[in-house]
Image (cartoon, rainbow, N blue to C red; front, side, top):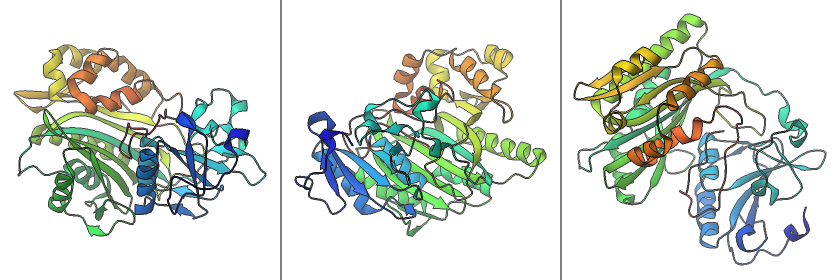
Length: 386
């Protein structure tokens, strides 16, 4: 470990999960150790993120090679700018998210994602046990700020279409304890507004984070859902894709989606995030919501002719649905071609935070890593899905 990262007494942070602190100024950090088989997003870990942000420290999780993360933990941890350092059995450190070899704790945020094979630990490249098709869905929606507004619709629709049942539980932390109830979820989120707030939803084969925030446009809801699906043949996969595209169509008819993106890859049946290289994700479908269609004056006929876009939603508020094909790498090229028709900065301004999936995924599948930044709060900039 680098000299400036040497262990020092735990002072200042004052937290039961703080095992080491080090660095100074912009490189100040606090490290929390765990050897638990599964790292959950429990209340103490959320509180550690908040306490560290207050003190201007970055949080580092240190585990051995046998721990895995829940999808909610991985998403919230990275969104807060926290990192994951894996202590390898034969000595040495690597990033649990990217596999990059590390000389010290600070390298987990100082170094960029690896681009050369020599920068990646060989242990990160070990094969993982994959038994499901993992669907990742990003859905941003805009709602009026009314008492009648209900959150949680997109995750419920996705779960029904992909798994045949709605979410089972929800809560702010893991383990989830409350039976699925969109009205109770909405009341809880409303009580924490106007700032950004997040709750979790889950069930067999499902793990999701639902984030909501008041804006000048109303209430913006961002759903990030992971589903473990098991289609057994090409016919079932086609049927599943049709059902998922139907979810995007219904959302465009019954609500105001801003943008949605569906991706898939082989994954674990339990959806856990191991410190191993994951297969690349392949985009399946893209929904461009009515606000973008209207703001940019998009020519639906031209987009249908060029990209096979389907006009969905309400007649006066049409949205565009792009089917990106089957599970093949060429889907990234089709997605890039579609996104090239939009000015990314104008799209971001038009859709606000909801344009985030465009910015995140338009660069293609070059790396499974995502950037990190100095934390401002546990709900800071998104840094997401492993």
